[in-house]
Structures are given as C-alpha cells and as structure tokens.
View (spheres, rainbow, N blue to C red):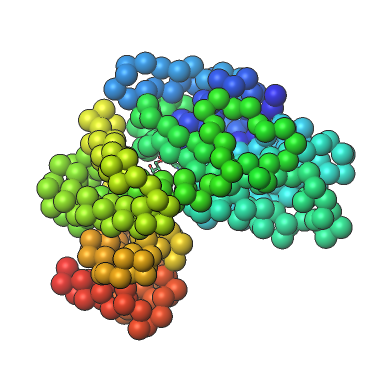
Length: 381
Ligand SMILES: NC(=O)c1ccc[n+]([C@@H]2O[C@H](COP(=O)([O-])OP(=O)(O)OC[C@H]3O[C@@H](n4cnc5c(N)ncnc54)[C@H](O)[C@@H]3O)[C@@H](O)[C@H]2O)c1
Ligand SMILES: O=P(O)(O)OC[C@@H](O)[C@@H](O)[C@H](O)[C@H](O)CO
C-alpha cells in the first residue's frame, strides 16, 4: 500500500509516518524543506523516540518529494496512492490544494479508483476545508466526479510533538500517548486500514473534546506562561498562578462539553487530569513559542479560545472568567519571531484592542465577551 503524506514535520514524522509504516504502507513525504527530503531519500528510515520510555521505533519504507522542485512527481504519487494524509498547519492547506487537485484530476481521468484524503490538523472540519480548496483548483468538468470517488473524512489527532533539537535531524522525540479519530460517512471505497485509527460515525464530540481541552489548555499554558515570563510549558505549569488558571479554563470548557454532549462529569475530569499530566511530562521539553504559535488563528471564531467562551456564555448563562483571562493573555502575547504574533500587536496598535479582537473573533462590538476581554486586558496590561 502506498501513502502520500504532506508535511514531514513534527507530527508528520513523529505520529502519522510511524503509524503508516506499522500498518504496512510505503510513505512518500511531501515537503518544502529540502534538507529533510534529501535525508529521507538518503536513508529511507528514521527513528521515533518515545519520551520517558527510553525506547525507539524504527520507521522504514519512507522517501521524500520536494513539492517546489518535483511537482510532477507529487502529482504522479497522488495518482497512484491508496491514502493521502496531511499535517502542514491549517494556513498551508490552500497552498497544498493546488498539487492535490492536479493529482486528484489525474486519478479521476485515469479511473484509478477511490481515494481518501485525511487532513490531520488542529481544526474543526480540516479535511472538509481542504476539499473546498481542492475543488477551487479543479477543472469544472471533473468537480462532480470528485464527489463520487474522493473522500475527505474529517479527523482529530492528538500526540504532543515538540519542536526537535536532536543531533540527528530526522529523529523525532514524542510523548507515548496518541489518539487518531476519523469520521466514516464521507469515506470512499474501503476504509483505510491504519493501526491506531479509531473510526467513528460523528467526529464532532471527539474533535471538540480534543480541541477545547488539550488545545485550549495548551494555549492557556503558553499565553499565561509567556505573560509570567516562562519559556517552556512545563515551567509554566509549575507556576501555581498559571496552573490554577489553566485548570479554571478547562473546567469552563468542560462545563460546555458536558452540557453539549452529555459526557460523564467524572470521566471528563479524569480526561482533564490526564492532559495536565501530559503538560507536566518531565521527559518532554515543549516551548511556549511553539504551543502559542499563530495567535490570530487561535483567537479565531471557531478555534480553541473564543468558541468555547461564546458557548459558555450562551449555554451556562454566566461569564467565563478564566477563558476571558486566557484570551486577554493571548492578545498580550508578543514574539518577534512569530509572524502572526507581530501582526496581532500591529493590529492592536492600529485598531485598538477592541477593534483588533472584534475583527479576529468576528464578534460584534456589543458582545458580552468583547466587553469582558476589554476590561481584563486593561487590568492585565
Ligand atoms: N506537533 C504537535 O504536537 C501536533 C499534534 C497534533 C496536531 N498537530 C497539527 O499538525 C499540523 C502540523 O504541525 P507540526 O507540529 O507537525 O508542524 P511542523 O512545522 O513541525 O510541520 C509542518 C511541516 O509542513 C511543511 N510544509 C510547510 N509548507 C508546506 C508545503 N507547501 N507543502 C508541503 N509541506 C509544507 C513544513 O516544512 C514542515 O515540515 C498542524 O496543523 C498542527 O496543529 C500538531
Ligand atoms: O498545533 P497548533 O498550533 O494548533 O497548537 C499547538 C499545540 O497545542 C498542539 O500542536 C498540540 O501539541 C497537539 O495538538 C497535541 O495533540
């Protein structure tokens, strides 16, 4: 079986690539990082280190294609693949859609049979969003046929893979924990046989539980950690001022999730505890700059901060005190090496805090959350 995976980065090599190899796929990684691609082709294997376990997994049967220099080969690989996956970041999905559309067009014209494309990004409706970008890049006459043979099942992926600082640039150190959930109704042809995928009829509760617990908690730790002068997630969580607020934010998102999906209270509390322990893992060093990257995306209307805060106001009829603090910390986040963090601070300078937050969150001026965030931001700055 052949898989094409876009994005040979942390989660691509450290999670998806490893499971694909364990399931018998030959994986072609597509990336723009020339050094990574060259090494993958030189060695055709790499190591995944399980943090704290002192054990390694050898990932074999891998190679690489540079999408800038070898676009035709990428199209050919997609045309022959049994599965396509991505882990490039939500902002890159429109970029990879062009080559993906060409690959899919070739596949349809060659009548090569069904294919599934799974976007493994931290967002709601990732594969569906990628499908829309692919359609925008396709010949109109072939667009209808995409519906018949190319599936874009949405997915939720969970494994903490920090930025890597290993001697060997291909080795990836990851936490042992992982979860990969894929939605079934939009799958075309045979369900991809990948060890470790859990198939579900409706992904919504799974992706919301993951995004509004793991990622809300993570973002809260990063932005509050940065506010209190910490540079790693572990150091931030060792500061009781951060931990107390992270726990508060997760009890607010928990209240929304329990009310919305009927999760058991004790079961959800155990899920939160497990996540907090993952953030405290002494064998994994994760930087607040990675976890807090792209604050404009993270402050978006459907993302991990604003969406649960709005739903808390609507469903619980109370002010989400801790989420408001986290949003104010996110708006205070400064990092000269992060394009979105710089853009955020420029926006605040140009439009004022309220104007910038309203534009990013797509909330109206008189929304209660805007008023609460405005006040908290003033108190914190
Ligand atoms: N790292 C984690 O802990 C983690 C966990 C779950 C989900 N995710 C999600 O996985 C996605 C990737 O995250 P990551 O941490 O692996 O990031 P990363 O930066 O390590 O990897 C992204 C890779 O995409 C490549 N890329 C950029 N532009 C490209 C293009 N046009 N074509 C092909 N490749 C391109 C980059 O060179 C890089 O190798 C994100 O959506 C993230 O939210 C990450
Ligand atoms: O990848 P992002 O930028 O959406 O979020 C940063 C981290 O919270 C994220 O990568 C987590 O490590 C991951 O989602 C854990 O499963």
